[in-house]
Image 1 (cartoon, helix red, strand yellow):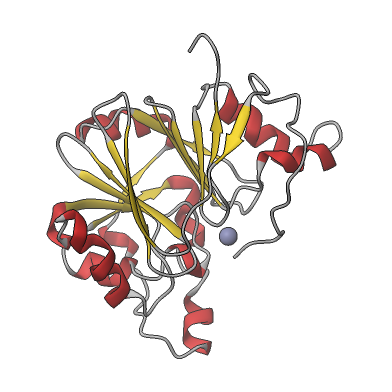
Image 2 (image 1 turned 45 degrees about the vertical axis):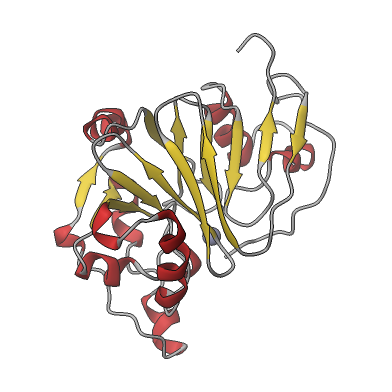
Length: 237
Ligand SMILES: [Zn+2]
């Protein structure tokens, strides 16, 4: 669920170097990224949302799913990578809008564990009435089966999967929104408004707060759920 349409714009002064470029993306399909770290990021697109699988040394993490009813497309998307559902240890939703979490109950039913941030607890059922209205196959999430952690504990949790990174609360899009930053530089922001929008955000605002928190970690690539990725090329990194 996006609030605004992405537009090209000047690079905000907040950007670490101002030296950026965007990469186009095919409308559907998958793409694998090899990074300096040992993680591997795989983009899985089988609807309108970019979702990602992060391969950890001790477990794989799925970041977001598409809408309810997209399970056949999900199966098709993971197949070329030799991934089965049972190879996915955890699923994390960047937030609980319907186009980011519609497959979570079905994946949990197949053994994938839900990684739920403490800041997301009150939002888990946000989309239940939307799916009910649309008469889509969706059983509400059983959050009692989730691993609930605080953002402050996320680095240790991810380490248990062999993934180096952390999860930050970035609530400007919705109170439950989080971003995942890997130490290799990949940063998954879900529906966070693109960095260019800071031009229209004078002074302090929630969006600027979120981006400042993210950019302090010096990410190299911003992976959005609905717009093209943004590569931040920072000299000296
Ligand atoms: Zn959203």
